[in-house]
Structure formats: C-alpha cells, structure tokens
Image (cartoon, rainbow, N blue to C red; front, side, top):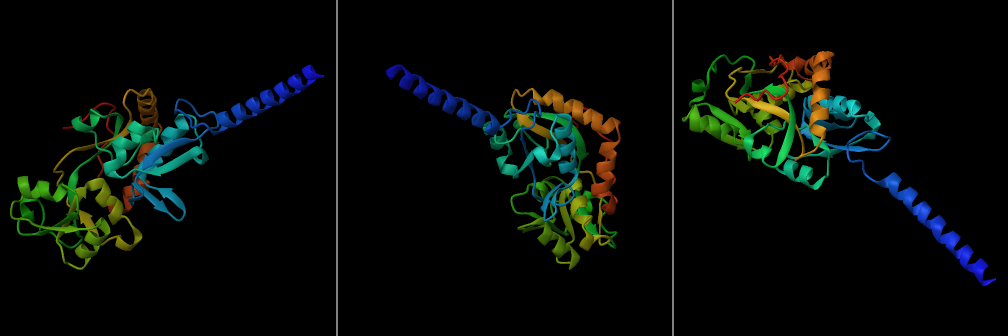
Length: 278
C-alpha cells in the first residue's frame, strides 16, 4: 500500500515535470539561428516615413522591407516577427542585451560602433544632404547655405557638421522633430533641412508633401547603412547572404522604388557586402 502511494506520487511529479518542460520550450525565445515556428525580435525605427514607421496598418518603409526579406531567408514568416522600436541611442544596448536578434534602422556603420556590435551589409549607401522647397534654385552647393536658415532636429549633428566644415555663416535652427522642420520649410520659416538623403526622401514622399520639396543632391557625407547584430553572432554571415539574394532577385530595387520613388530619390546602386565608403 505504501509502495503504491509513492509510485502514484512519483507519477504525478513526473507528469508535472514533463508539462513544465513542454511549456518552457514553447515559450523560449528563439536564438535567431533558424525559424522553427518561433519568433524573431527585430529592431526598427517607428518614426521615419519611407524607412521605418509604425502606422495604423502595421509597419512600413525600406528598412522594414529589408528586415522582412532577411527574416524570410532566415526561416521566419512575417507573422513570426516581433517588431521593437530601436531609437538611435538604444541600438547597441538592445543588441548587447539580446533584446533583438538584429536591427535595421538607418544604422550607419562606423568604427566606434563596430567596437560594440557587428554589422552585416551595407545594404544602402546614403549621404548627408539638404531638402529645400521645390521652387528654390538658390542652393546648389554647401557654400550656398551660408546665411541660410538651416534646420535639423535637436540632438542631431548634421547641421553642426555643415556649420563647422562647409558653411560657417549658416544660421542653425533646431526643431524637436523632422516634421516640425518640414512645416517650417513649407511656410518659409527655414530655408533648408539637413540629414541623410534617404531620411529626407522618406519624409518628402509623404502624400501631404509630394511635389513641395526636392533634394539638393549635395552628397556631403557617406552613410553606410548596415544591419546590426550582437558581437560575434553567426547571424552576420547569414544576413549577408540574404542581402546578396535581395539584390540579385530584384527585391532590393523594388523596395527602393516603392519607398523613395515619390521623392525622385537618386539612390546609389546597391552596395557590395563589406564595401564601406569613407
């Protein structure tokens, strides 16, 4: 009788252990090595039209399209992606903590960042540029920005770079958001807005701004956008293969045209993996 009680109790303990193990394996976050029906966490921007934007209909933009393509090649369907907002100041920390498997968020590859994280790519070569009103023909070179009212967002170094190196007499105006700069540009409170040309094109391509602005085409810097991964991650090689496939099968060009086309963005050709333009 005593033996039966012990055996029954053991059976209950075993059953609970099996159940807990099953539940644990189903809830465990995937490491990013393969799909297998699990989720993958990907970091993007939520507030950059044309690149990474959270909308009532979902997530949209060039970076989002790239991330979806890469995830598919890694074995994940779109409904297996867990999108996470990756603000510029948080990106390295998110990767180091393992909050996301990779980040595609206008993430320029720089030597300082490469000390902290690894990069696949680049997948887009952007340049610092200016956005001006469509009827303004007065800004044809960086020097033409002298005495102009130049806008950038608070915390950005883009406008300061121009004043320090190219147009020392530019009148810098800092607004809280790019949208505020665009409104100022539209009502002539400012003369030009500066940041990466891809970001400017994304904003200018919005329905309410179509035909109102144009890119200056000044190409003042090279910004090599890469996909950030945790230092030492084997995802880097897998993502590089996915990016090569995206270019070769035409998906990259299709994504560029869909997201930047309305702004007449003269994009650079798809960069070769590992080719970092200084």
